[in-house]
Length: 326
Image (spheres, rainbow, N blue to C red):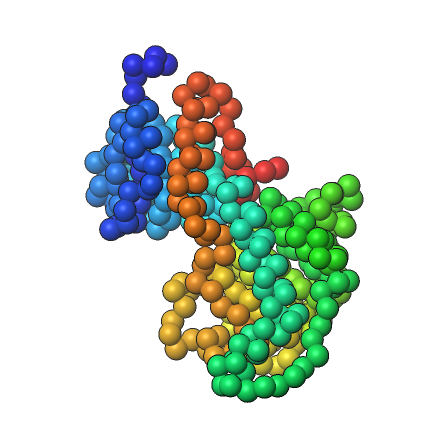
């Protein structure tokens, strides 16, 4: 490919969303077309060789897919690619990469924060402070607590590293067991999930949404957990059956939950989770550090340089599995 041949790059954003910061650096390397729905995609996809997707209501992409005549590579500016995985794309030769790595540390800091908030009873302290009530309590210690990270990918490793740094014992769950992991005490195979749930003080969901993980945390999983355990979900909302979670919290089957993702987003204003004292809620923001949008563009540009030179891309997603990695 000659350097005079400026490839066409389509950037799919949400309607009304501003252009990604740093897009001028992309314009310097190719012809940039912007799309935000099926109609604009149908106009921009013919001739497009590369896509950068910042919006994941992908029914538009699936609907306009037949117009993608030269597409070679789609880059998703998120770690989770579940919303992109429609059959025609999975079956195609189009490569998919993701934003693995950008949000790992930030999400791990969020998880550490929520674990410590539970351990030191901070949500209650903040409620008492709001009510001007002085109420001394004894609280828990983090040291020696068992943490089970479901999904031992790059985010899971950062969570384990930070948990370990304050004396907690992190174990992982992944497709294959590993004993030689530097961050986890051990990584166990998926089949061992339930026996590991029985001993965990904190269960952290850091798995991608796949047909195997959808609805994985249901009444059966909560019944297996210790009644003193807390659930933290920074993965995807549908991995947890929300109705079963609410029942488990109300029955005291588990002690609390910190949730950044939900089956329905935004969470409806009248949803029972808002008013539960043992639940910490955030609006899908655990990874979003100040400056993350520009960091995503820079990561895309690094990979674009490799594509332009005909080199192997990094963060290749295994489309059959639905995530980057083996």
